[in-house]
Image 1: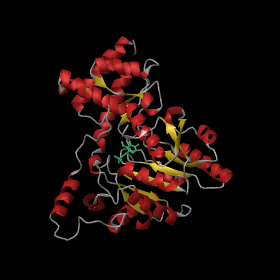
Image 2: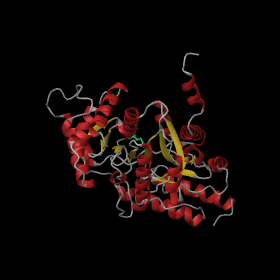
Image 3: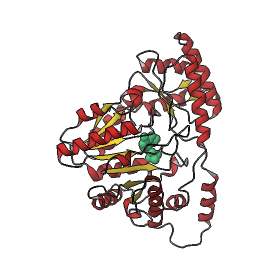
Image 4: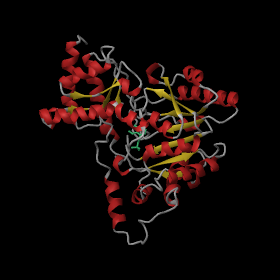
Length: 395
Ligand code: PLP
């Protein structure tokens, strides 16, 4: 066999998101794209803001020489400094460009941080429902993801986290606003997490790092102020990107930022810079680093996502589905009306509505809806949800 056993095994147990994507292609071929309502992908549907196009055009005409060459592995200092200035303003912590490393999206940042932190067998805690790539990302660097169920309304269950700590616990990944639940972690929940991490560090005698995965930090609704995980623990690192709030997912641009008073902050940043190089990223895309430098305050139209959220939430509630109102990101995570979420997702497929079963996120009995879709697609999907709700006597 030419390929590694691990790769073969991973390909056989293909992710649910990928399986739903392929089913979507089949349904489109069969019924025509306009008759398929695909809510399975977390792909930003809005175009980037006009400020992005303006800056891109300006930079394309910039006569400076050498702008497409290699650069330091951490990225352009001017961009790192622009990110640090924004973080300093938002978090009131003394960030400088030296605390920031530009990365190939949030996915790249997560891999860089985990490579810098993990020794073989080290454990990374994450809360279910979770972004499924966490498991593979921890494994990439010899680590093990330990999945802990969330508590009420998908908030962190602090006691369950406490119980999951072992001498090998190295980090906790938090993701708020959350994919797939749309939950925003409350101040109260984060205070609980802070206590749990402080206790764990005391018991273990080494730092337990909080990795705050926050690519949806710009997508928060109803005027809510986003409680910031980084503020609750010194040994903390932000990993994020411009994929969602600027709709630049395909451009692969993001960053990591180490909290200035993190133990051994400089050594950790240096380890991340090394990881960025040896993982083969080398540096984040040069042109995109120059573009986002000037766009620290730009956003897509968040009100549009909120209107989609409202239409979906009110629609599903009216039909009798049970779900928490998403407060951020662009997902909803309703309870499946029957315990078998995969079976329920298949019923929706008969109405040409594609969603992802909760089992794919470590939470069977639920299903994930992405409302980052054209309005026509959401309207068509709501008709399908209504038909299936009637079949189950909801409402
Ligand atoms: N983390 C979460 C929770 C995500 O949902 C995603 C993408 O969907 C990522 C990380 C990866 O983001 P990026 O496209 O910036 O690599």
